[in-house]
Length: 622
Image 1 (spheres, rainbow, N blue to C red):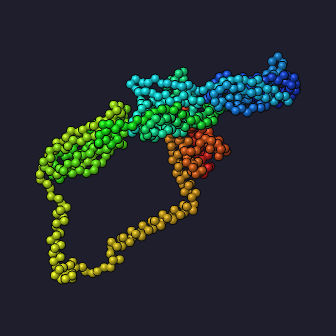
Image 2 (cartoon, rainbow, N blue to C red):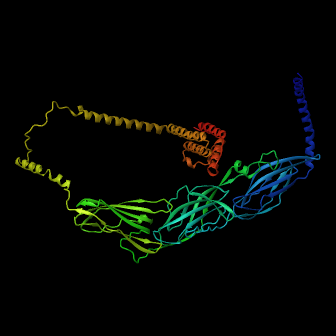
Image 3 (cartoon, helix red, strand yellow):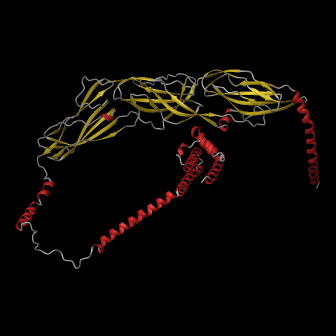
């Protein structure tokens, strides 16, 4: 009973305490304003680093003391930008005196290396205007020229790129500075991105310049890490070849297009003052979002020389093959009769330009009959590639005196030795018997000759009249018209069904053309069902990367169907511009993009929440 009474008493005192607190605040507020109005307003600006690289940026902190509100007037600059990212305020009472201050955080991002000065920044507070002092700073390039040491047993390594302003460069591993026209040169392209730089590739490396042709590169390069100087770089490596097509001295370079993701500073809303536990670069990267900047990574110009093939010593059967090859021949069967075909298999092994490798010419001998050869090319994708091109040619022995298949020759140019080489195969022993099988075609032609002569003789007796038919034909009970015969009825039924089928198809097509939205909705419904199946499977498996990738694919395919564009072209900027009323789509899409570069680890609750938001939002966008 006492407990209940004390609680009632406490509840009765609460309104009186609240009124007393409000009265104290109203009395103290004018005093505080009076104290602050008498204090002097001062301003200071501090740059986080006086020297930084062009891809990093720096933090500028402006502190205004003696006021509770202020507005900044940031001047426009040409070589760098200043973005206001957050504002916080502090209010203190020490020994009965009140003080207030405001801290404004800005991000400084330079366009190119150089020495610059931040001009005075105007601050308007309590009817007065004060300015900051100019702050000099220096912006350095994000890297320097790099020469990688050559690996043991490798050829010359051509340094083809400086670490450019955006922390990325290209290195080309090339074993030869001079080559011959038509030669295939193995190369290795290595794209370096400094660790910490976030970027998305928009294309694979391409060659700029004439005289060389490079095949299309695959979009899954080998990924490693290397230390260059004092920095760690993420390295993408492609192994490919260059084909020489034009003589003379040429200059080429390697390029690729990418998009750099620059982390944006968060707007601080902390109650902890100008420096809160969450004012850290990690939280800025995770919660602050990214801005995109085009990034073109180019190599230095590479000088290469293409030499003509020598005329001296060129064999007559040379077809343009350049490299290192070997020749093998096989024949089946080895025991045949005259006129029976033999399959001659010719294999050319090695490395080089197999597009210029042609079948060796069979010797022109009266004892042999030859047919044209067909070919099959088999590239080897192992670490030590030895490609192979196989030719199959049918040959026929005309005489039983033949005891062997003659030797064949194949000529090519060796670019390492600078000479022409001719390889010859060994003769293949065979056995040819003199008995030949009768040709069935001849018997077929001769068989009807007696009948033909007899018909001509009988026809001649009647002087152009048809011969008299002595024997009656097969008797039938009745003669049915064509339309009553079963096979004719079956053909008509099939034709009618085919016409009906094509009529229905055409009707459906015309209906779909008149109502394209119906087909679009059906297609969209099927795509949504497939996408949500993939999302549910990855969510049940707790695979965050697969879950976010499936969410991104669902958003792109859904919006691509609605907007009438390719799904893969839809970006985060498109969603932010066209669907500002659906921030949940932008949140999920942004998480998926960040996961594609740096991985993700979502909880089951987060994945369920994303799934529910995605289904609800996409269903409303039908």
